[in-house]
Length: 281
Image 1 (tube, rainbow, N blue to C red):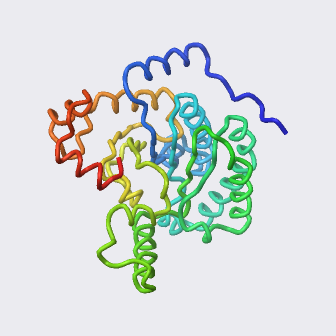
Image 2: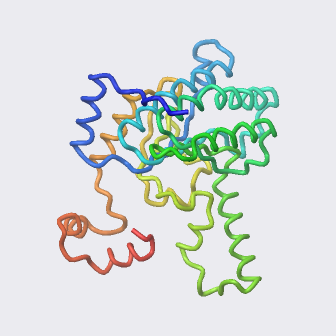
């Protein structure tokens, strides 16, 4: 069946998006720690699940806006390994909400040319969630627009530990030597292999920590903290975060003069060449 045309931004929204594209680079990869659902609900004397349900609307708006802007990857910290330690009734509610969201949103994602992927210890999810997730990813696998990457049952330390185990096994089997272990090899054994590292990390809810999220990949990401809770966070907040990102100078350990020389097409410094060799930039 032929996919419907994707949703188009309003004229006012299109103007804002055009202004953003004209004013600087759009991050290729945005990662978001979606925090504050429970506090949003508590402020309104509502059960915590009300905040989680309202948060789905924010996901929908941000995914659509990122796709329209030309963001290539959007990684959402949807459920951490630590979240399994929450009260059982809340965990069960979150799993049911994830299941219903996948059922309700896959058609919309496909319509908007979004490719759905997931990272994390997926086998810990309830089997019905695993099956629905696999179905949704299969339906959208040939889409060429935004890649929406859900971090589910995810932990940065778990991910690095699994990569180390995989590499140690290769050494043990004689497939590689110790001298061949480098940053590129470790990156290629993470669950995000093949994705660019996040240019911008957004955390909502006003907390200043990364909470065990993409610990390796965030080494040079720009951080943006929003005081707004996730259910309040919409595309206007996203645009503000991107404007802030565009105002920054990303030096990657270099000095400003080296960055300007590089951006002006001048000869690359030794430090720049070393950085590009390490990161594959």
